[in-house]
Image (cartoon, rainbow, N blue to C red; front, side, top):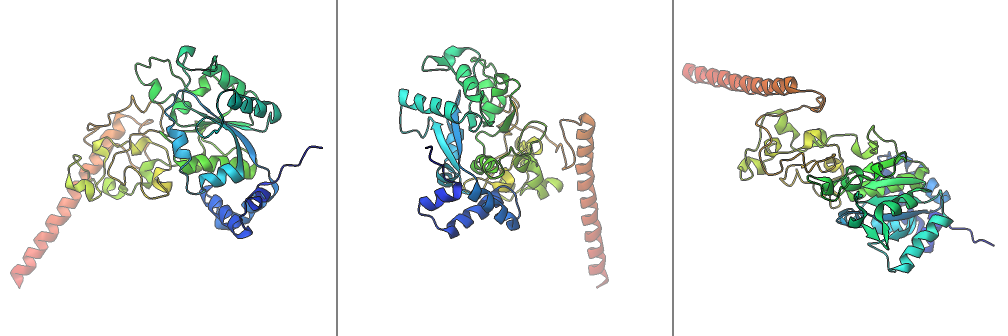
Length: 363
């Protein structure tokens, strides 16, 4: 008789955790998914009744940065995701086995859990198989085999989503995103170089909790984490609106919080949750630390630089302006707006100074 697999809640209890700890995990999970605290009970009920989801994690042409980011998740913690929410059946970075044993474990999942497992893919796929061959088989063949009966395919990282750095000119390997290989297969893109850890665990947690894929935008990215541009939530946004920009990396105003747009910041055109979730457990993110955003979650970001030179002398966009849609006219209008803002500010200050002088004279 086949043994019934335990639910996620039963697994948590079997590992020695209390009901109280379980509810704390549910509250943290609800927050990560962008749900209201009152919906914690909904999350708890889902985890009490659902079983862990088998996960296969393939690494194609990559630097392992996405895997490294994933194992540093804080809310929820990686160990909570791996041991309590999902059943990580195959992942080259964390596997204890090697060689034929590891490959046998993957094949077992493909047969036993067909239609139930989630496939996570990290890295791009080269056109020429000589650049990526594992156990005598090309990376493209292994990817197609694993995706054939997957419940969902998740592209973790910019390389699997868009091709990434490997696809940058001159692209000697012919690197391409996994969508170019898995044509017709629905793919949830979770771009970033690497993605934020909590974004990756959050997407998996959504599938576990609700049994369905998260709502996505027109590019297949989860709206919960890619609905805003970094510019919209940036802690330096007020300085942008005031027309105050750091002019160089040794500019004292950089430390004072001035906008980094003139230093090449891609925040106005980059969709990601960096300014909301932040990195390293919510401590900071590049712009807050004084580094311009390089737009790593967008397609072809490496070729869309520059990263170390001035990108423009004047700001390009406000919250409601999409620079990809609007052209030079908008750029000119933005420039005029900033100039007008500066002119008005100067006029007001001059008028105030004049009034002050008159007052001093009458006294």
